Image (cartoon, rainbow over all chains, first blue to last red; front, side, top):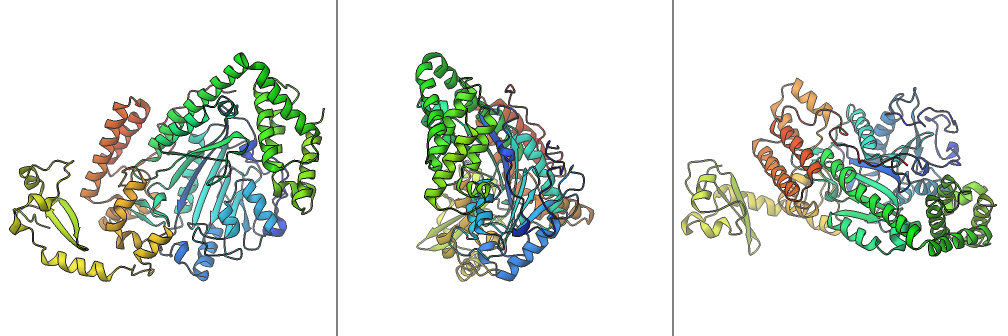
Length: 385
Length: 204
């Protein structure tokens, strides 16, 4: 399956073989998961599939020496940067970034774009071992950023594919192909009983995590979000904020993902998530939006317009405050209350008002106070009448 | 391994009990299990059901326990189980074999009772071992007879639950999985996305 962004048109990637911190793309565009099209994109921002793999014959990350890590990194990097590794992209390659050579700001940008985990940016395992100079990297498909492959995170390989809207099936098909191409040259640690073997036993089996990023402002306003969270947890799904583990649901963005990976095939998992659970949550959110419009129109309109007002006139904005206000504005857009604002603007502002992006867009590092002022100015300009 | 009760048939039911820190294993066959009135869901241990004199720890098991005691660290990466308990992370692929007995119940709990892998098997590795006609490598990927039987049992339980909860889409996917698992020569063929229907949402 080819995403519309598969053709290497935007440039900016530089020569992938020489790509390092210095020749990183400037990340000025919106990213795949904020493109805001695709199935059910009024509620589902993006679908993501991830898996974990380890190379057979090498110790897992917690017990690997620096030279083991360097060797694993080199093996994976060679495979990933081979021409044609990413299918259907006319010879385009994944762009490789050595994270142990990247600047702190570049690493923070990759975290905000959901291409690497916070843990990978810091180079530390959950046990606290490691540091910024540990040999590790990430391969990113450019310009679409749909494929991201972390090397030497908690496992040797953590692969993710993102699609806009609800498209877990498409993402799963694509990641399956990537897995086969990786495995055609690399031996993975695998056992008949436990499946793909991972450093943490909670990831064994298929090693697959399906997740959807959902915008659920109406369920939050009607107070039904807690019910949905409990129901999801009863079905052993994890409900997290948009930055994953341990993050709050800033901007009413919730990430739903499966917690168990053993004893359930990829097919069954998909039928559960895409066939049953996610459509239900979408339905609840849509119903709550209708309720807001029909029964609490004045209150809802007031809340949306106040948010828009603050965003248009504030002089200092905190990141979390901006996220929450933008969420209300996005709800207003979806309800047709503010036809002059486009949802892509809101989605892009969500990303660009995060600290690292803000500094990248404005071209220099800033302290927290200056960031608040810069954030307010950015939002004000983009949402100006 | 022969059944400890009849000493005739192959033992297929295994149990490890730990008393005063000493693990003792019991192994009996299905026929004896049925005669002892053990069902799949029994909470009684084999030790309680077997007559006193048969509950002796056989020699090989004693040796095994002794090695297990000594081998509290992985021979390949040196990780100890105590270290794993502290960090939650294993050190290498061999750890799964070395600590299998301690890990299995933890893993099952973490995966809602799922104890056996169902799903994708490395395709190239599978093709290679088929072409080279290497039954050992093939078994390492697909599991032996016992493993396959356990996998099928797990899948059938899941199917029962799905049907009882009227989750028909899931049930259909499980039926496909059971078909695949019953025919180990054709595991997970076709692309992964296949077989699941669309969510049925209108595009907006």
